[in-house]
Image (cartoon, rainbow over all chains, first blue to last red):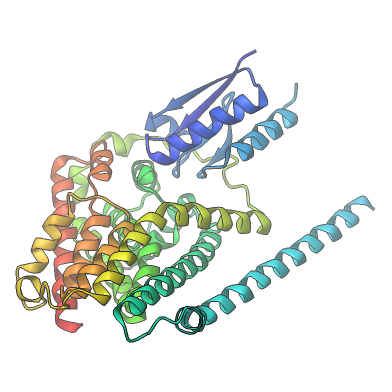
Length: 86
Length: 350
């Protein structure tokens, strides 16, 4: 099944950087994933995120408030999939 | 059994981390101490330039200043990033929730400096603060101080003009943010906030509160140093290069007659030019240093720098989603007035 990855952020350079780093990480890992940017503030708020950007994988909050490097995003994704019950 | 082994190896790693941080500190202090003597020895003893000639003095100024500012920048950004990793917008929101105006404005201004922040968090933070019961004026104090008092600017002011100017900048920024937020609160600024802000439901972030380990904090500090130094280096080199040329060659009273500290129109003019310009402090400060050397008043220049970093068009456009144009106008006017006062004050004092 295609993984749904969303980057939440109102469209600043940090959000753009996370988006690009995530694309690189997905590419590196060879994941079957769709990466989208979400600029709608209400979604950030309902999740309680006040310091964008945030990384959401299959509706789960994986990381917020930081711009990790592509390899770090890769680690986060790998950890996330490893800890998720199959 | 296995847990105790893990614990011990964890403690070992922490010790090794502390050891390497201490080693880096020692190297840093050594480099900072040796900066002056080393270049003097290299330029005047080995290459045989003369410190009394313009070329020798200009080159010495350039290499000495570049090294000094890069050292200060890396040191302070590392410390600030590690300290800030203990703070978050969410925590600040909890600290300010339900406070009354007044002292809380000052607390918000202080937290604005201590909390990691960027213009992209302005809108979610604003709504989050309001939903936690933080008064509008207090929220605005926070929003004003976080861009206004900038740690890179602080370091550069210290490196270029000494600690008195850096301290004045810090205090002035805190006072402007405190007073401006308080005044906006008294004006019942909530009239000019889009109504949906008060109805927004704000969840609690599950999992965001993961506590980083010491190693991760140190790692974050190191990454931030590399990121910021890389970003500001070109501006810095151009600025210091200009400064070095001016230092050696240009007459020092170039602007004295037109825009010196004695001209009452210099400060408002500087603020007017500064508002539409948008840049980070690191881009502005080398220019500030070059202009100061040509006889512009320090108050005029600080006013210019504060207008550039605090009042930015992109942030106003983001804020427009939640604030009515009226409040944005009043916001700009109140902050600009604060900056004007600081400009005149510094021109009179320095």
